[in-house]
Length: 305
Length: 253
Image (tube, rainbow over all chains, first blue to last red; front, top):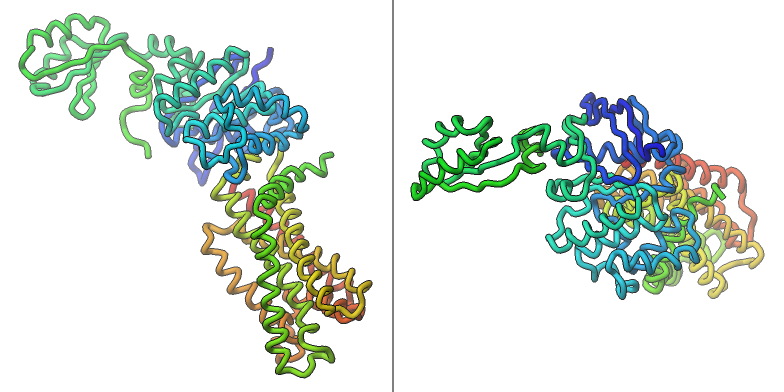
């Protein structure tokens, strides 16, 4: 099976500023791919380029075998998109939103009528078919947007921050839906700012910064390749003095605000030392390293907005 | 099939309109009807005749074109802007196999349809009040309404493409629509204007729409029907062409 999306040496400039800068990306069929990066890293631009909505300055894109943007229309027939901003039709009910969207794909009413009950069940919106959009919660709207993206039974689904702005309950429901899609063999390309989400959902993660992929692999591979396996977060009174001894125990330390992040292969020595200083007001949290640690190491702690 | 790709966009707008059809039709009808009756009878009582007919009969064609222009203009400015900018309806559509040309063709066809509806409402009033000289000739007003609707739909979409917000539309109303209403011959014959102003008015598309519609209401065949038609089509095509380029630059760059 060929790659559902293949991007080669893609560059897109806005006013001399390369937002996408020599990007290479290849999706494996039936896998969930995460595209992570700080704000302005080029995630949304990459998705828009891949969909053929905008033209690249240089590079090559094949979406489901079609060269983009020349054959965008044919390729998008088999793609589903969950955009970042809410774009549901506020004047329509839930069912009318699905029917209207399906017509843009040239679907017949009978085809859609057969499909809509399944989509509503998938989105947990049974019984809401005739509800106006204004009566839906934020989570329901997101689920409907996801169901809408499935109206054409796409092979590949683009999701641009599908869980941003939702409460944890709503996020979990969306993630369950995405897991079911992965189980059905769909290919997913997902951008998110939730590292735990990416770590749990994605088979492959590409970290994007300043328009290029700076790291790629499974969450486990990325953690193993880029970071020490343990993190001890130290904070509280006396951190200033302790900081000087930290280097004895840890390969790498990083201070962010009032917290010192100690990255180490041997956490026991750090923890033992901190325990002997019990009662001094120095506190700590020992945890395994995660994708967020990798992300912060690779892209830095500075704000990008 | 490919030439009807825009149809789902038209149908979407139609289905939304259908939900609110009552107030929408009332708005289309009430405003021009009040102008027509108020000015027609009120001002008409003071004037003996204008160009050889009662003022209300004279005013009818002006109100018809004015109403059609307004309908196409409001649809392509405020309503289309809501869909493009506020509701992100166009962005959602662009993620499907449809392209921007399909979206804009659908909007153009929809605004023309709404203009036709407004025109039909006024035409019914013209027929009901017997303001037409010949029924057969007044049927030729239907293609005039379509051309006028197309013309202002195309122009409106171009303005929509460059508008940062709703307030921007006031420029278009103040600098284009209002001069056309006041100088284009809606309320009085342009021959009443000084030469230089009449010459300027001859460049405005609404003037050409009225030059077509007024004789048809009054039972005469217009002078130079093809010429006036070409002007309306040219304005509409230029506007629509500009909207294709400018909206692409706005949304897809």
